[in-house]
Image (cartoon, rainbow, N blue to C red):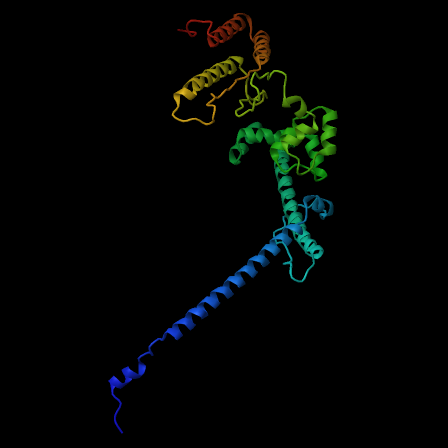
Amino acid sequence: MEKTTEKDFEVLNKPEVETPIDFASVKLKEHQTAIEKMEADKVLREKEKAFEERVVATTPSKEVMLKSMSDIDVMSMNLQTSEVKTTNPDADKLNDRQLTKVRAKNIDNYSKQIKSNILVGVKAIFLVCRDLVEAEKNLFTEDFEVLKQTLPLSDSTISKYTTIGKSKLCNQLFQIGRMPDSWTTMYKIATVSESDKQKKLLDNVNIDTTAEVVDVILEKEAKEANPPIWNYILDRPKDFLKIAFESNKKFADVDPNTLMLIKNRVEKVVNDSLKEMKMKNLNYYVSDTEKDVKVQVLVDESIFTKTTNAILKFFQKKMKGKTADNYAVNFLNKQKEVQGELATPLGA
């Protein structure tokens, strides 16, 4: 028997020559596979689309959830730290009503725990406010100042916290578990002194109440939305910038001369900007008709009069003799300077 050589192995392992028939068979199979994949992808897309439509159709509405949500323990002081239990709904086995019910229950479980923890946080803030009031009452003034320096709170925040802590209305809302979750809203409520307004807040405020809602409850929004002083000459005015000043004497003084200077400079900046940005000065345009931008600055002129009179009364009441007169003269001269009625600044 002849011995098999390495050359014989090469001949045995050489692939057969591919015939046209073989090539056509392979291509046909590839084509059939591609069609099958396209069909499978189409079925999958249709299934996914149907599922997405069903998800939308079975989503619990806000109104339905608010009517059926579980109550929370408003007096609880404990954070709920465990993970919320949820049920993964099997859409293939559940009808639409059952699917909606399972999803609503999952939402309710999360809502209940989140609201409970928010409420605990609200209580914690109020207790901080209460403790600051107690500390201010029980400690020597110097000791209270040292205490404030050890806390991660600014003097302004501490002042507002103590206002909240002293508020009987805030304490009532705390006791019944309806204190708003924002301390700035708490502060707005704490500054309300009229008994009829306090009662209105007590009857309507809850954990979700915002500062804006407080204004609505107090019927301020309707009065302040379009105050009579803001008489625009623009066709359809739309506010894009507002400037306000702190009117609470506990936190800042109001000097009409400063306000007047700000007003004058703002008006100048606006006018200069409008001149600079005229359409003819630009190498682009933003509408077919190439109209210039129109901006109007409005000012409550009565503020200057009211605050000026109040400050002059302050000089007469708190100062004596020539000091009061000198202060008044300096104040009024500064006002004339700001208004452009004095040629040079004071002391020049």
